[in-house]
Image 1 (cartoon, rainbow, N blue to C red):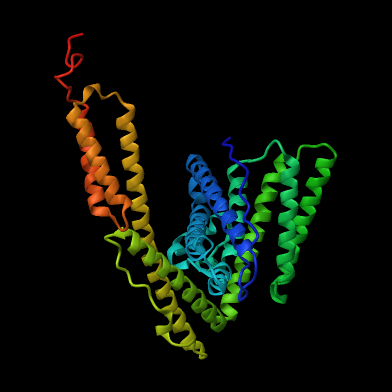
Image 2 (image 1 turned 120 degrees about the vertical axis):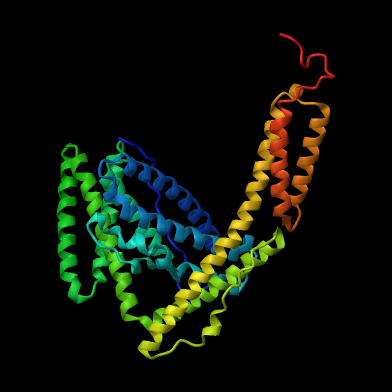
Length: 407
């Protein structure tokens, strides 16, 4: 059985939509969300490997793809939050923008549609619209999916602490209860029936544990069913909001895209200032679309245009973030090869080769550490350094007494 670390749990989001975040709340949330992002990525890697090793691995593909799409959407939104936070240099406008980015919709359906539409592997179809959720909802949905996948794959992150799993199960059932209370009348009866079954099964497992029995065989499937119920209720609530409030959704999406565009312009400005050649993607101006219409048909067309703006912003964000990431990667690679050259004995290289390597490293560092960093020159100098290092190690220095001697 593959073991994994304890599952990550998303932090509680501060504030609410339309109200500026408190600076201390924003700082704490960004730090906690960054930790959650890293832990969830490691957990998804374990789940992915477990699915590959499973005999029925294809049955897990849908939920794994949806989980990874959710993780990517959250990670991208975190990048914008960090860019807006700007190490704490924020005023009222930036704090309002942070609130919008936290509580606004994650527009990830366009990039994760195939994954979402294939998520029926868990026994419940999840449409592409399922990703039209806020950042906190996306994190909770990711938590629920991870719990479900761990249970189905037989990965138990806390076998030595059954009580902790029982507490987590009871918390999951209570979250389901809260979601059932918000269900509309037509679907509340079915949701209440499912909750009653979860309650009964949970009570039975708790009673068995109190009597000293091992509830492990019942606990995994129950965790999976509770997580799936929570997921389905979150998705259902999201889809109802989207269907019933198209005009409000358009207004909220427009506001979110305005905040996202402002954050993306900050990211683009930082990239242009720090990297050359920098990408030249235009950041769409949402105001060019005009005000949100009130006619239902016009609202549908407006939502299509907003979706196109969101996709364009995603392309621009990926390009600018990739350029900054390449600069950082080139710096790390140059430092790593320099450390490799320093760690190895120089007896197999001539003094001239050592001097040439030092000069190439200096030139490469100069190209990459300046602002803007010269990526083209940095790439070329790194390639020259690597090539010279490989060829120089094969050439002994004939002027040294210990070089080229017979053994």
